[in-house]
Image (tube, rainbow, N blue to C red):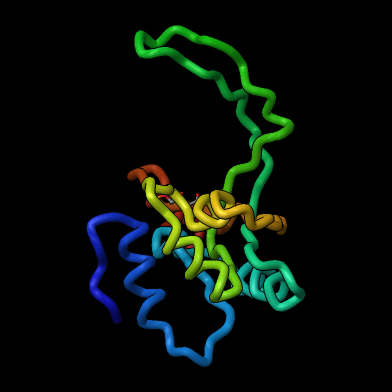
Length: 147
Ligand SMILES: C[C@](O)(CO)[C@H](O)COP(=O)(O)O
């Protein structure tokens, strides 16, 4: 158990520093994705073992996505066919994740974003709807029904 930091990124960095040296692969997971199936964890770990330095589970975006300005007026419609909703666990070769965190200057909402910044290709595997992030009261109600 490691004390969290002031941000997601700081918490992951603190945890990473505490991972024993013998582990060459690190998976970062959101506790909020409490219903994540073990098969998804295995799929991510397998892809890292298979040679990918950074691996994330993704789902297609099913809603139409609009860009909106500060006054709430639509600026444009984003092509959803090129978008993916990203989940955890995100898996990394340990050296990749360590380098990504060491190089990070901005705040990132996921660890793969830091790997992207240092030029590491981020491989995707199919995500799982069960790995939903329990963020809002409605999500919790759904999770309670599913559990
Ligand atoms: C990592 C993540 O779950 C990918 O969707 C998400 O970015 C986490 O966001 P949070 O604001 O830290 O819950």
